[in-house]
Picture: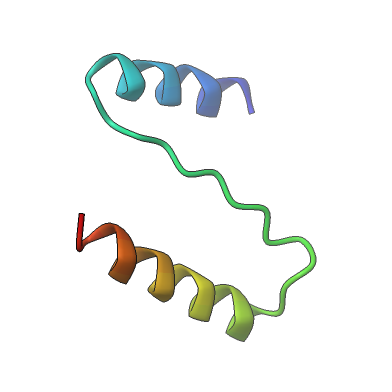
Length: 45
């Protein structure tokens, strides 16, 4: 977790936006659907 935070901090400093999702309550199928939906919407910006 600490390594993730360090990487996210570095990426934010370089101008990237970080989207953190919790998949603990989703099935793999539902998680994949949500991921595809997010990628499609973010790609349109």
